[in-house]
Image (cartoon, rainbow, N blue to C red):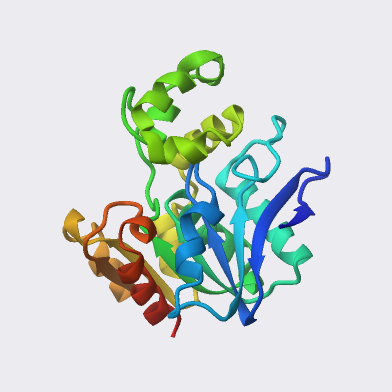
Length: 254
């Protein structure tokens, strides 16, 4: 376990690090998740093993600190992640990022281009969404006011989340979880999709084949983003089909 202070108040991001060769690979989890739980199996898969690998927990999540004074915008998450990577002496990393982590990774690459040499986005959020009471995921969490969520709304989210997601969501700070969801749903200006289209690094977008054609895939391909369906999985591709995920990721990073 490694850590670095990433705010002026000294709040620390923590990560599990696997030794290996450069370029380093940085794995970033989604909302309410934690990278060691979601990525360890595939980070050590024979197709992906051998690189220095940092399984990073974003601020407010997993093993990292949970400051209540932090805004948890996508830009804030990206800047905090950048501070951790600089402290770890990482440059030109191959970033593999899931869901909200993919949104953060796009912002990271746009704001701190020297830190990212390749992007593999795993069913990442690219567009703003509309909060919806009772919905699963960020839209449902963002439908609460912060005080309402912290005071007890989180219990309703827990009951909808299911055992797998709650096993890591329960580690997240409640303010962190709510603010991260609100800002993920709100998105960025320009949008994450627009930023992605204009990045200069090699980019791959993995999505579940069962979702059907990915919206906007044609424009993404035209901009140089490889859009790759992965069979036999849902949103958590690396957990549902570790072999298919490792194969697609290794091909993206070849």
